[in-house]
Length: 203
Image (cartoon, rainbow, N blue to C red; front, top):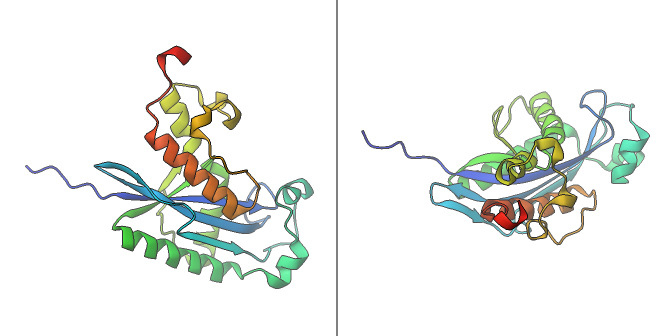
């Protein structure tokens, strides 16, 4: 029997900024995404993460917010209440963008984050709540923190960016602007995919 042909994956780095810990009571205020590359049976081919990007700022969906969470992004909820995109429209536009990128690459889209848990929680909830579907399905999510822990042979809770080898980290600043950080994290993913793991001298 001939081996099953594997469909490649299109890795899309995603970062969101929100005003609280969970979606529903709190709001996703911005969404940034950058195409990181394609992973096929032949390996990972990195893309220029600044070439294919998506960014939207969204209207809040409730009056509740955590001041400390809001302060991280520096976004103005009052301004977003008048200038932000309607969540349904933003999620529909994002879905169309993801599907267009995936079709051009001939690959299945995968959301990537560092860590993915927070960003995926908001993104998936918003997609299902406002569009009824996710272009990533229910499980098309890759956590870069877990990927690094597995390749470095470390417990997950021991992993922080500050202790990663310098060659893995992007030279871009982490600004808490969703698109800036999505691009930065796309570079981290590309470096992780090319990394052979810690040298024996550093173990």
